[in-house]
Amino acid sequence: MAGPKANELMEKIVSLCKRRGFIFQSSEIYGGINGFWDYGPLGAELKRNVKELWWRSMTQLREDVVGLEASIIMHPKIWEASGHTSTFSDPMVDCLGCRKRFRADQIEPRSGTAYSYGGATDNAAVELIVSRILHGGPSPARQIFEDALRQEPEEEQRYKLAVGALLNSSDAGLVRLGEEMGSLLQKRVRVDEPFSVLLPPGKQADSARKAAKQFYHQRGVSNAKPFGERAGNVEITTRYCNECGSLLTEPRQFNLMFKTYVGPVEDPDSVAYLRPETAQAIFAQFKTVLEVSRQKVPFGICQIGKAFRNEINPRNYTFRSREFEQMELEFFIRPDEVVEKLAGSVAKHSEGMDLSTPRPTWGWEVWHRYWMEQRLNWYYSIGLPAKSLSCYWQSREKNELAHYAKACVDIQFDFPFGTQELEGIAARGDFDLAQHQKFSGKSMEYFDEEARTKYVPHVIEPSAGVDRLILALICHAYSEDQAPDEKGNPETRVVMRFHPRVAPVKVAVFPLLKNRPELVQKARQVRDLLRPHLTVFYDETGAIGRRYRRQDEAGTPFGVTIDFDTLGEKGPELKETVTLRERDSMKQERVKTADLPSLLLEKVR
Ligand code: ATP
Image (cartoon, rainbow, N blue to C red; front, side, top):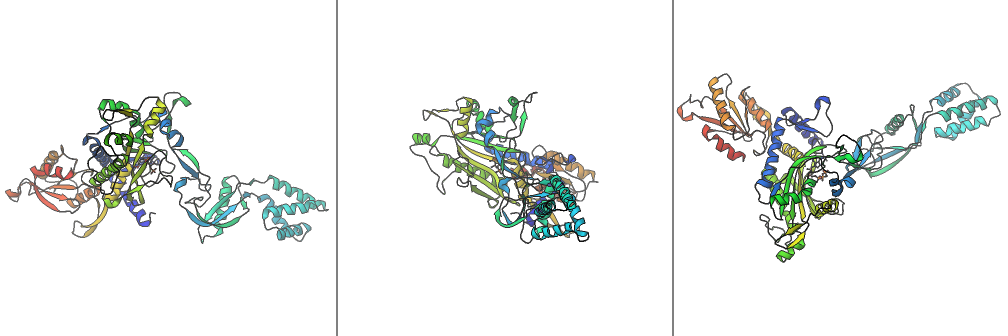
C-alpha cells in the first residue's frame, strides 16, 4: 500500500508533469474529464521516442515481425468472436452512502463495528403532539405515554403501543387523540430500506447514526429517524466503502467497451465499439498479412494504437485511463505436435537455457520465455533497471488466467503507489484464430510446407501499455539532489534522469550571454548543426545556471554552452570548442564543435 511518502512523491511528480508540460488533464478548461489525459510538448516527445524504440526493436530490427495499423472501430462480430461482448466486464459496486462507484475487486478489506438499520421514519408531527402532552400538566394521556415509554425502548413500537391504549380508552377525548395520532403515523414518511455502515475501531456510534440519517434523508425522509439499530463486529470484509464506510451494493457486471453507432441510424444493427485492445485486428487480418508479407510460421504481427476501456474507477494518475495506447505483438508459432513431428521432440524450458536464438525444437513454453526475456531486455535498454521490474505469473487457482491461456506472466514495475502491471505476456494457444475462424466462416489455417500439414497457429502475445510505461519512466526518472545555485550555495535540484534514448530533448544549446551578438550567432549555428540529427532546445534567456536547471527538470541529458573561448577570444587553442555538460553528473568538458554531432549521436542511440 502506498504510504504518505509515496503519496507525496506522486504529488511532486504530477505537479512537475503539469508545470513542465509532460501530462495535462484532458479538457482542463472545462474542469477535466475523468480518465482522459493529454501529453504536452515534452510528454509528446517522450511518447514518440518510446513508441519508435518499441517499433524498431519489434519489427525493423527483426526478420520475422511485420507491422499493422488497423482501424479503431471494427465489425462488431470481432468482439463477439473474441468474447469481449459477453465477458469483457468488471464487477462494479455502488456505495449506498457517497454513491461513488468502485471495482468490487479493488475494495480493500477492512474490520470494525457494523451498525445496521432497518429503515427510517419521519415522526416530526407525531413527536410534536407527544412532547406537548409530556410537558403539560399531569393527565391521563401523559400517563399512557409514560407507561409506553417504560415498556418500549423502540420509538416506533412505543407510538403504536400508546395509540392502541388511547383507542381502547373509555374517554372520548383520549380516543380522538388516538385517532389523530394513528392517522399521523399512517401518513408519515417511512422507508424500510436497510442500511449499514462500518466504523473503524474506536469511532463513536454517533457518526453511524449521522451517516444513516443522511442516507435516509437522500431517500426522501426529511427528519429521518433511523430505527432498528444493531451493532456487531465484522472481520476483514469488502462489503463497505473504503471512503465513507457505508454498505456497498452487490457486485454486478459492467461491460468496459465504449459503445457507439455507425451511420445515421441509432438502431441495434448499427452498434459498434471502440476497440478495447489492438490485438483483435491482428487476428482478423492474420491471413491477409500472411499472404502479402510472405512470412512463414513462426512469425509475428505487431501494432501500436489507441484502445478504449470504460474503466469503472480510473486512478493512479494515467495508470488506469479510459483512453490509452497499446503496443502489441502477436507472435504465431507451430503447435507443439507439429514441432514434435518435425524435430522429433519438443524442447521444454529449463533454468539457464540459451534463449538468444530461436530454435526449431522450441515449443510454446520456450517461446513464451523467449519473449519474456526479449521484453525485459528492452525495458533495461530504455533505462528501467532490473531491480525496478518483476515478473508475476498469473495463477489458474486464483482465477487470474483466462480459461484458454496456457500461461501469462505480467511484467511489473515498482510505482510509488505499488508494484503494478506494465505488460502482460500470454501464451494464448489457438483460441483467437480458432474463434475468428468459427465466427467468420473463413479458414485461419496455415499450410506448413516443411511439416506438410495444415494447422491453426498458436500465439504468444506480449501486450504493453504505452501510457503506463511513460508513467513508469517518469516515476523512475524523478530525482532530487543538491547542486550549487548562482551564488554557490547548495539548493535542491530536480532532475529527470531519463535514459538519453527516451529523453524528450537530447541536447540544449545556450549562448553564455544573450546580449553578445557574436555568442548568439555562434550558438544558433551550433543549434542548426545539431538539429538534423537530434531534438535540440535552444535557450538564451536567464542566467546560465537557471537554464541548466530548466533542462534538468525536462530531463535533457546534454547541454552545450557557447562562450568567449568558443570565439577564440582567449587564444586559438580553444576556438571552435564548446562546453558539454552532462545532466546527471553535472560534469563539464571541452569538445570541438565539429565533433558534437557524432559524439552526441553515439550517446543517445
Ligand atoms: P489490468 O488488470 O491492470 O486492468 P489488463 O490485464 O486488463 O490490465 P491487458 O488487457 O492485458 O490489461 O492489456 C495489456 C496492457 O494494456 C496492460 O499491461 C497495460 O499496460 C495496458 N492497459 C490496460 N488497461 C489499461 C488502462 N485502463 N489504462 C492504461 N493502460 C492500460
